[in-house]
Image (cartoon, rainbow, N blue to C red; front, top):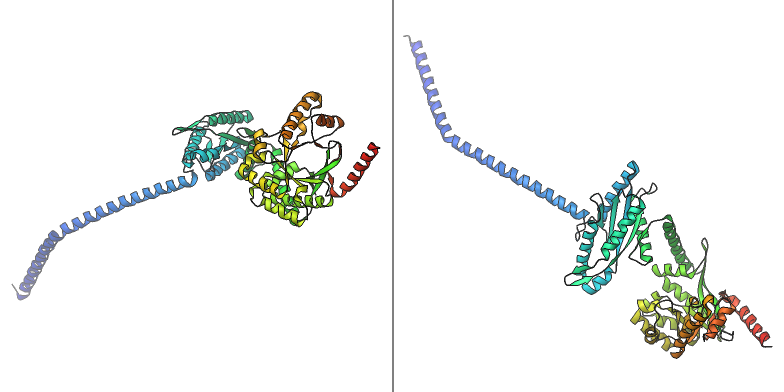
Amino acid sequence: MSAAVATLVLTNFATVTVVRDGARQGLELFDTIWPIALTSAVAVILVMSLLHRSLVELVQELEHREAAAQHLALHDQLTSLANRALLEDRLGQALTRYRRTGEQVALLMLDLDRFKQVNDTLGHNAGDRLVQEVGERLRSLVRETDTVARIGGDEFAIVQISPKGEADIRRLCERIIEVIRKPFVIGDREARVGVSIGAVFASREVFEASELLRKADITMYRAKAAGRDCFRIFTEAMDADVQRRDQIESSLRTELRDGSGLHLHFQPIVDSGGAPVGLEGLLRWNHAILGALPPAEVIPIAEECGIIDEIGLIAFREACRVARRWPDLVVAVNLSPVQFRGAALPATLRRIAGEEEVDPTQLELEITEGLFIEHGTLCAQAMQEMRRAGFRIVLDDFGTGYSSLSCLRTFPVDKIKLDHSFIDLAERDQSVAIIRAAATLGHAMGLEVVAEGISCAEEEQIALEAGCDALQGYHYAAAMPADEIAAWLEARRSSAISDAA
């Protein structure tokens, strides 16, 4: 063997030896590492599995919270009924379907009657339980396709899909009223409420849920005004009335700001012999667009929008100025029950009378019987203060409201005015008997008795036979501007002199 071959053999042998040694060392290293690698892989897999599980749970929790938040955002917490937001959404969807397919939609707005009394007598917890029970009763009356919502303290709404005309809605309203009238048992107590309902149908002219809600609200308040515990169905005339009311309110505020337009006309009052003894100031307003508006329309609006105090004091000041011009006549002016909410009313009237240099004894303050019910204790205190200041208190429209002997004994008045409704020409004898009974009651209590609304000689005779002390009405004169009073008085006195001659 040559040296070169030997060298090559030795080199190959050394290489094989090195490779064999490396393989053995690699196997030894693998034997050492693979358990660690396997353990690490298992650990990674376990960690990833746990992370995946946690992530799934977190996602589910977030979805649950989101669903709960969405439910809270769209449902009333007390009753779990739909809230206003969900109501408007579903109503909007129903209106879209109506425009597309003609599927009819009706909206009912409901407000509980006498609910405040439940809160006041049984407490707010009882009120909450009653509201919950109302929600359950309403839900039992509708279909799954309908929506019952609570949109306020004691206000609810129902969206009914595909009602079969007005008759269907009327039946639903009647069922609701019947069900809500049934007593609510709360603990060991029993509560009773009623419900006023306004219903409106979708129309091609109404494209927004808010507009349908507005009309339903208008209609519900019509039901309230009609005596409560009843329902009304929307007509366009109702909307026209609301627009007229808003126009009147806006114009009233403008008139008060500008100081023009509102004024008093004065209707004379005569004694049993026909001689003038007084004047009653009656509010008049000739609206630039609507024309002459009667006090019966203007005063309630002024009371509702909070400006009756300003109007009342304007009227009182004008009455004082007329009283100063004719010191031999008493001048009467009407007070709104709302004015009695302010404890400063007696002092304010005294101040104005002083500023106008008028003796309070020449002024009569006319109030209605409803004042006794609305502001009992406060009213009595104010009336006592006014009488101490010298003003005379007149109970207007006696016998048409809450009149009773106890009222006359409790509340200090100086005069009662009998409403014209007591006089019935067809039942003359009965009218005389009724008025005489009222006059006898008044005289027994030291009160002067005035008959209102005398429109002819025969009515005058009935009032005189019954014993009335004074009379007022068109038979003597209509209400007139202050500038015409002097001419009327002169004509009346001249007529009396001629008759005497």
